[in-house]
Image (tube, rainbow, N blue to C red; front, side, top):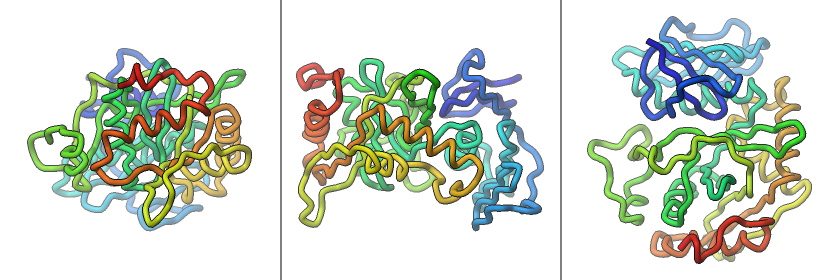
Length: 314
């Protein structure tokens, strides 16, 4: 039996079920990836990029290791072989597959994986990037209360299309949230212990947007702490390009490799066509109820044809 899924603009086929992936009936993206369980070497023979947990060779083949969980051999544009570590489960290995291995495949296919949450409204995507722990997932869940749909809580993928605006591909129909975020959102935690990293995994199939959508805006989030004023600033030109470049997943590992030039071109096109912002937002869970309205009001004046109104989203 074969199982088919779509994530980050990739068509994924596996001989086993992949919980947390979006199932599809047929391949639609033209970027086919096959998953399998098998043998994976401890190291690549001749890597051109050699990091403690990641190696990439001149052909584009990559080896990613997650100690105690699995090794992933990512063959350029083709398939991923997963070798489980002793005592590890397939479900745990699939959790980590959703990160580095699929982000590598995005780079190989000319997509740009962004370390960002993404939500959709009225057929357009709002990208929410920023450093780990900045509140991307919490804000995405808060925006769901204003009528937005989830496209990803940790990753999304950017694709440049000839003669058309770039689009954002969604990731997985689930969110991973800290317990304090769930408490602040009055969302009961799911049964069982939290997953890797201490986050609870919540299914989001009922409020997930599975289609690729044009980007309405990109926002890099920064908590307003230490006397920093709360504000939203539009970025243009080189500053906009730099802001989006800083959201790339695996940016350091991919720097200088052959795919880098295409990546820079894709980001430049996005930064020229979609408004790019940096937002120093109100910090503290006690102000979480006001955060979506604060963000949407700040963007409304700079996003052409903003498809929301505070009345409609309230």
